[in-house]
Structure formats: C-alpha cells, structure tokens
Image (tube, rainbow, N blue to C red; front, side, top):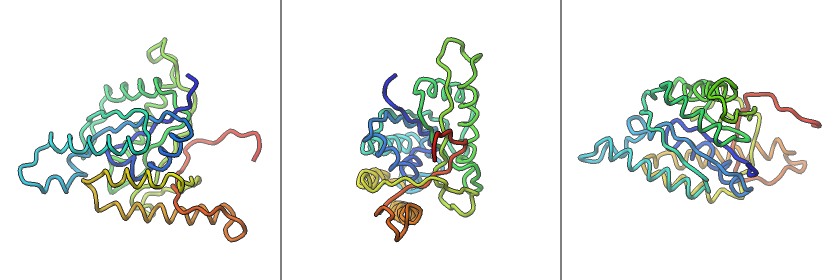
Length: 243
C-alpha cells in the first residue's frame, strides 16, 4: 500500500461532516484515501425534521440519511463510505460489529484515525463510539486475532469537537487550517438537509477555531491568516525527532 490513508468513525451519518469535514477534504486533496464508517444513519435520534413529515417510516429515514451522507462524502472527496446500520439511540455494539470494524481498520491501515470525544452525557452514542473504536484499534493490533491478516501499527486517534464543548472534558491540542477547503465543507454541510438547524452553528465553530489557529500560530506577531479551522484532541503521545 503506497497511498496514505485515514479512517473516520462516525456514530451517526452526519457527524463526520460537522466535526471532521475540513480534515477529510484537506487530506483528500493531499492524496490520502479517506474512509468513513457511519455506525448508524442517526435514523431515530438525529432525524427529527424527517419524522415530522406525514407518513414517514424508518426505512425512508435511513434512505434519506444515507443519500445525504453519500452526497456529503462526494463533496469532501471521500474514498470510501461504509454504513454499518447498527441502530441509534442507543447504538448496538455487538461483537460482530466490533469484528467488522477491526476488519475495516486492518484493511485501511490508516495513518491516523478520528472519532468522538471521550465523554458526552448529552449523547452517549458518541462517547460509546469512541470506547468501541479504542477497543477495535486494540484488537486490530493483536497478532492472535485472525492470524494471517496484516496487523495494525499505532495510528493516532484524534477526537473531534463535540457539540457542547465545555461540558465534554474535551481539550483541543491540534488546530487544522481548513480555509482552502472551506467551500467543500460548506457544500457537504448543506447536503445534510435533515439537520439544517446545525448549518450555521458549525460555520460559527469553524470561524472560532480559525481565530484560535491565528492566535496559536503567532497572533498579531505574524500568525497565519486563517479564516476557518477545526480542532482535535489527540489520545496517544506523538513520536518526534525534533520540536
């Protein structure tokens, strides 16, 4: 495998767009093959606008959310998007689903991974997803799991920004300038018709993180003019040769 790769694990079908759409688009432009796994469609808990339509049923909601996610993935340059259909509110983390994710991780061999914050009392699907991802990452490193498969190395797991940051114990240590791909993220955001109420919110988040990027890259003393950014929290230590 010569191409660099990344793996984004999203609890619901829209999470990868709001929280990591810029990172996806930017790395796709850099030649990364980015795979997105949506554990659920968000059909029960994150599709209120659709459920308000007369005669709506769960299969139609799933179909609509899948179409939105696929359109957003296309706008961002995603290499592959997979839907595990694990239900939501709550997600059903079965051993079979874990083994499927392990197979995906080993197949992709990501240079880095992304998922949700460690704590989210407003939506336990999110924090339980990250526990599930950490477990799958561990299993993917085990030589005794499905011997003969290529085992995983030690990719960084970045936690993307939760919705109500101050309540989640989430502390960013990495800011990514997404200004050059903002229009791609904006187009992806606008694919998510089922959650239109979040469009402006996540535009504001990107603008605020752009401000933080400028401040931390030098501020008025020569910081990069960054209009939009995304923040991430890394789980594991970085290994470097110089600072």
